[in-house]
Image 1 (spheres, rainbow, N blue to C red):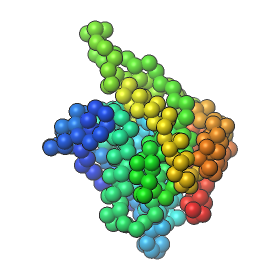
Image 2: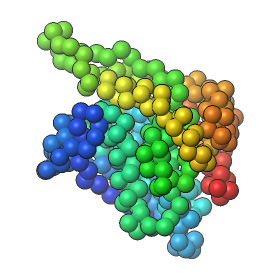
Image 3: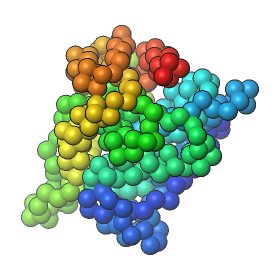
Length: 301
């Protein structure tokens, strides 16, 4: 359950066409598949204490695939204490947001949604410096968003960016009749990593495994969108010349420090390796060190 300090907002956004572009959005429709309705996207928001005065800027945290925004509340609290307005959206198909579980029809959808969250914040803070903190696959969405809306983004924090994603083979949908069906965009693909890949501590592993807000598979459409974004977004963001911080856990089996360093060099970015951290770099016993690096980088940039 979220802290009472957070403001809960449900943004009503247009459903997506099969390629992820904006649908007609004529009425509310649970699920939001096929472009014919509206979808509720949940956003938790936290601002700095009144004693800090006006926020230094706005930070949007984009969670990893299978994850959800509320797992980043501690990060948000530290950023708010440092003077930032923080938004924690549940991306479509994740957490408490609507949409087919684990489904992303194309990169256009997360790019649109990040833009809408940013517009929501900008309505109150039109001149605020804006950064996006992307985790895992969220780092890929963040780069794609920055390239599509470069005037809105001051810089990015790319935390444990998923540079070599591995998912299970797509499964046919349905029971016995499923054997006669073809693989389709909503066919599920297992998320292959385990709790021990994310956390060193057993209690953290158990908490993640038992979190009903985390989905353990993604759609074939999401896998295709992730693959396409990985092929294009890093080079496109590098061409913008905007600042970035790349974070990696020293013990992360999914995003190795060497892979993170190579990405940082490609982007002309700073790379920081957090000793003892695994893939969930903002949770677990080493989270405070990762958060401190983000706060330090924000203050310097």
